[in-house]
Length: 339
Image 1 (cartoon, rainbow, N blue to C red):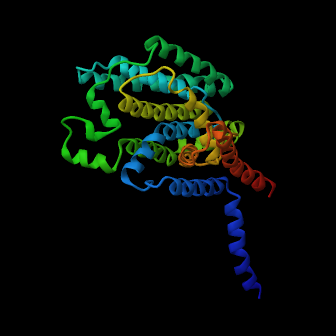
Image 2: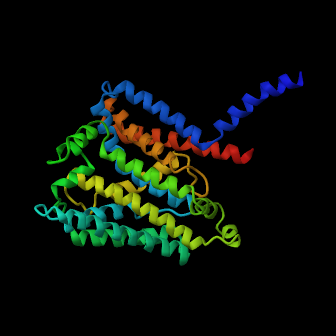
Image 3: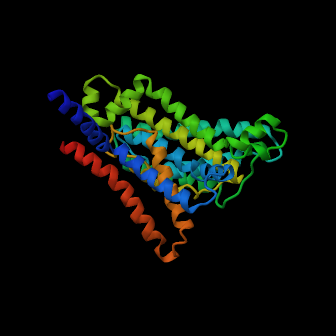
């Protein structure tokens, strides 16, 4: 009889613990919004529609993944959108349309600048111990100022082959195999997979474990012998690389640089992190769930569009859906702590 009771209780306890995980509520919300979007958008499962969906959410996904690493390490990045704008301006300033080799120079220069921005944020957060909000708020104005100096108005030049980061099929001279491959696998997806692979490799090292340890309790991590400054700087560098990948996609798509295009993505990346069940206090959550959070925010916009909601109510409906998406992980975290 006792064995039977244990067998009955085990699934109940397992399900209860599963639903107390912030990631579970995020996945449930994702499933609901995915179903609603698929119902409203009749061609949702067509190849072209799937590619458009991936392209529309790629920049936010990449920024959210980088933001998630910083948040898990105990920080936050208010400069990610400004950094994205800066990188697009540098790319389109270095590149000359009629000189294909300048595309390679632009990649190298911008990547080095990206590492520099990550090191500056990491230095302020990890070594100088300045609150992350203050550091990144200050650097956001620095990145914006440099971007406006380089590109006061949207524009610039881009080499034709740079479109490979957005649509392989339109690049002249590309092998037919890659052209067919790009029909089904958009470059945006490859950039996201690259970011996932980067985090997967890092997560399997001591640095990956240290990022969670520092985010959970920086003082305990320091006493345990972890170089907390180096760890937080490494988190900022990973974030910078993710932003760099998003800049490649943006320039490949638009062939221009814009000093102000990244501004709205900063808060959206933080919202995607929270919706994905990652604790803003640090130390808990999965970087991959930031992808789910970004997709949820993307589906919110699509639902509003395809449901033909009047303009006067779009912001209200969007806010209600986002609050519901955030409330799920927050409630799960609270219940788990109370247990």
